[in-house]
Image 1 (cartoon, rainbow, N blue to C red):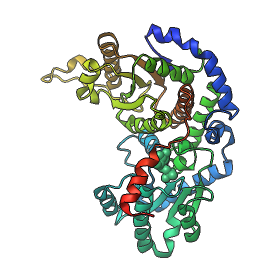
Image 2: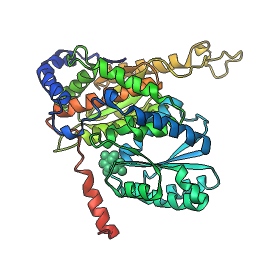
Image 3: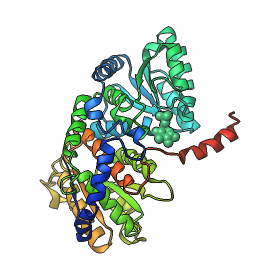
Image 4: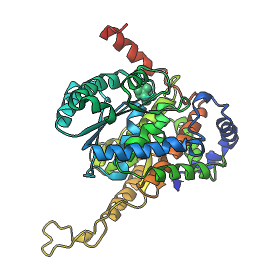
Length: 423
Ligand SMILES: O=P(O)(O)OC[C@H]1O[C@H](O)[C@H](O)[C@@H](O)[C@@H]1O
């Protein structure tokens, strides 16, 4: 369901050189013997997820949907990006659905936080606080404000409207949830934040947004089955993983994930965390960047076409748009747009993509990989997640780096805590 294409002969020729390494690392990943093997719970997740908990996610989501106008998700990083990415991809940017899903806990911006608090003041609100560690400062700061607001507004009933998704035992969030009697969902120990959208972390907010989470899990399972074989002729995720390594070996240190759909831009943010935190270690890794075309062709297009040759593009093409429009004819044609009359707007988008590909590859000398996804449905979202998980694990293992930790993120936190006077 995800196809990988490239026009570059050097990639096609060299990919198979990696087959032996890929086979070995694939075995290690499947047998939980790879680097970072404490965090590979996501690999078998499509077969092992807790069905009872899954049913409870759906029940809780239905209850929350009844109760609120606004569902506030409080989290950051892996406890934020996946849910937002899924909701925007599947429902679009102006879904006009009830409840509205909004996000907090993803910043220290006082302006943003104050404006969210102001926005929800007179609305019916439910809250999902999400933190694997249960100690992330952005999340804790926002949640204290939210909790006080909810306690004041709903008194005894506040606890019916707050759900905590966190570690089964560790972290202060678990202690708060137990003390207050909030419903809780568990983030498994062996699934890291950036892999957690397929757990209650992502699934509860996604279900509250009215999205069919069974379809997400069936997409996930389908990808698991399609990617069972490590043969690079059949496993597009691993072939993509290898292409990245070949391209970096040729000096391309930046990967720009490009979509032609604005509602995919948060997918790119989610993908950046997945690849950036997994790969950016030991002075190694490709910098994950992103753009939405044709929008950004009018800003970044110049650099891609003629700037320093540091980047390659990975185009995430959507085969079938969620909606399409037939361009109308106009008797006067003052705008001189009649050459498009009767054409579909998606066809125009696809022609823009084709023209851009030719310009970047043939004239600009920018290597391109094309990943084609069927559509922006819930099933495709699940499929795509698993595809990128496997690709990411493989591409980082090929670097001989642990894909599942993020030791560097602690450095800023240490300095910040010192400046904040935390002991
Ligand atoms: O879920 P949490 O424990 O609150 O973590 C949220 C995020 O913050 C951290 O600093 C990590 O770098 C991320 O990998 C993680 O997703």
